[in-house]
Amino acid sequence: MLTTHTNTMKSFIPLPHYFNFSREKILKKAKKFNKNIQKRRTIRNFSSIPIAKEVIEQCILAAASAPSGAHMQPWHFAVIGNQEIKNKIREAAEVEEREFYQHRASEEWLKALEPLGTDTNKPFLETAPWLIAVFAERYGIDEEGKRYKHYYTPESVGISCGMLITALHNCGLATLTHTPSPMGFLKKILKRPDNERAYMLIVCGHPTEDAKVPNLKRKELNQIATFFE
Ligand code: IYR
Image (cartoon, helix red, strand yellow):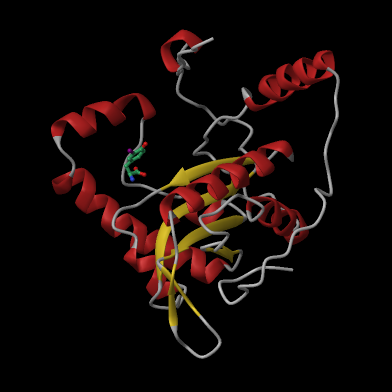
């Protein structure tokens, strides 16, 4: 299989899977999927109910099926279930968050965050069963230690994060996309190599029974899409 930049030979195979659904079935599936994904909510109240590692493994494999620039697959998923590491991550994230809320964030930014009810306190980083730190590989390194270029890295990693969130939601699990900024501490705590940059922290678990979410509205179709028929 062609996987890395080192494969220069062209190789094509017949498209292995193609779903030749009827027009009716396509629309039915579109509606069904939308109905399900509309139930996705970002949560911040995580219970400590465990989730099997195998579930996370499957969802990461799904995420890693994302398209990527020149098929470089420029992502790495550091999956943390270890309590001591979670504690360290919480501690380091809260240092950055205190700086953010007290100094770095503009008035406008803080005002925009008000409806979400966020603050410097991040207990979910310790209580949720899994933290998935997603790293973007700024460049690749071949078997001889030579660097090679990656393309459209933020776009590629962003797509895979979206697919990961969708895959987890499909299992009935809740997530929080958490981006304490800067995220340099993740690279240090998780001992990731120089070519990687922390991209996003995805918190995953079950909501607590009394979990609350802000009363947010999604934009209407005519606000987000323009059709040229
Ligand atoms: N990282 C901070 C602030 C924050 C920023 C945005 I943009 C959000 O959508 C939510 C929170 C925090 O996690 O509290």
